Length: 247
Image 1 (cartoon, rainbow, N blue to C red):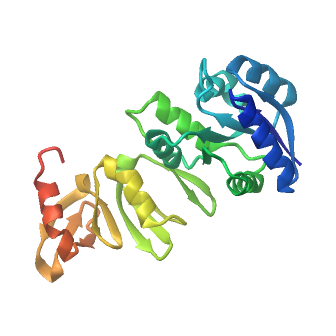
Image 2 (cartoon, rainbow, N blue to C red):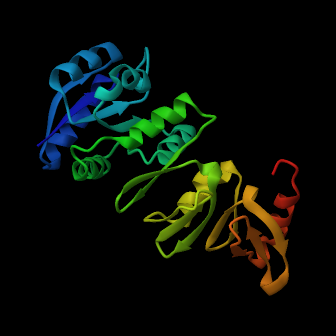
């Protein structure tokens, strides 16, 4: 039985979550609820839940204030938020689970089922999210793999290549990781860090490009001596990006 605590400043939202959880048929018990940071602190300290369903916006204060106060005692978290692209991107960088309002029964059941799969393990992903929020100048990306989460500085990832529904990453420290995420996912996450899709199957960090060659259909050579193809339709975009002074 997974023990869940609800934190949302809207009583109606908490009632809705409770009804959906009770109707889900999952071995989940709601052990308490709160609408503000102070009440949540008291309730979580008393009940020691396994999982928080935590709204980001709590009127006075927010979900991050609660996590900061809980510190290492914080349980796993599934965040609840309105559709905010900045917040969603932050969650995806950290591989943190989140629910977008309005929440449906199927969305909630899926999130609870995922949380149950890692029931009892430390929430490294939440720590990454908190660190990214505290030190945005030192970003980290959490990449889920078969053996757990691997943390990368996105600025030191050299390139990504797709292999069906899997993506392989290479970084400047010589690491190679295969993960069950699509290249499209990494394209969305890494483009703000200076990455460019050169080909349907390849994403490169422009900081690590040494040269472009038109030979063999066109390719870029990277600092790790790899050669990545450049699709013909991407050629001018790649050349413009390489010529940009901010690279």
